[in-house]
Length: 438
Image 1 (tube, rainbow, N blue to C red):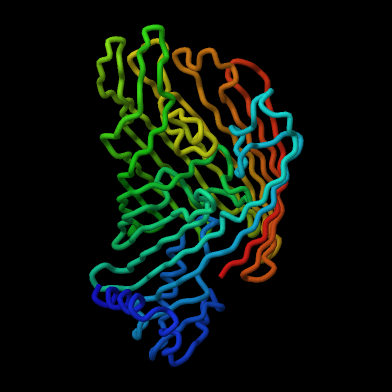
Image 2: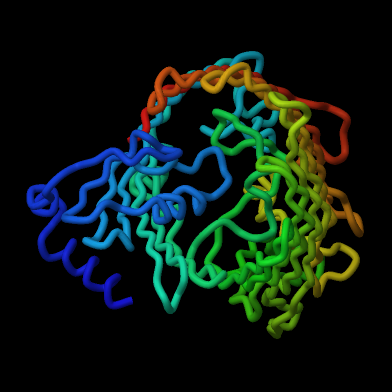
């Protein structure tokens, strides 16, 4: 740890440019990433630390690859990487629009709210920067410190994506949630991805046990996020409001791997969702509803070039963790049969996709996904257009012109169906992408 603190102090005190100036030589490490440039003082960085940098990359297609520029300490035990990518996307909607940069079927507008059936957008906000420190220590084993962000905040403000520390199997900080499977999400230009996939980030304390051959287990406590539909909902004017949460979310998953690109995972989440309840006399009390979810996901090779992706989710009160439901505020909804309480609705999501690798530099993929919100105890009431069912279809092709430059094209189609009618609205989108990594 002393070496870690010395390295960070040296970077802060001297800056990156003086370090590069004082370096005696620059070398190319011949390993899985032959273009990685290392700046060192005396001794050549060992292959082991390079493997840590590569193997600890999250298995998600949007995660930046091993950075081109790395700094190491004099003995090659720590490496600091700085990198990211610039990503420009052009979007054109036709035959119906989605009022969002991301292609969410739940955002297809209602009839009468707009007459526009075509839409053009451009986006650069998904461009990403990251800093990653890896090291091999006696006390903490392989040590990883990672922080990353893009520009999806207000007015293209910087937005945190990841900020965590990993050591001895522990993950502490802000990272991908453990009720999800990054590896089982297919590639899309659309930033949101398949509507029925589980995807979220959260502050967490997680532990992963991976000492059994082909098996891995993770348990975690996570910061809860609860978004509900609150307010007056009966003739007695009983009402509810959001409240501070009293318990963390509890998540766990177990995974079996075979081969380098094949796995199956089962995951579960249990959560207690607290809210304030007001009765007709103005009295207030804190109440809770239990939410839960289960997931089964897999990714595996079908021959040498074809890969399958799939996952299925079912539960109650887990809309925050489902792509197309996360913006609807339906973790908790009113219970018309019991005006003093809220309820957690059942919900479901699933997806299946294929990717075919024509060559090391060209691949195409397609996926179909669906999400459904179920009614319970007569909710929703007097709102025939509230989201009930959404569908999502994508097909795309990507070409890595060079190791750093990628272009791609994508077609998307979405469907949105309301609760109490049979009308379905749809939209189409063409995406084009240019991305340069550094």
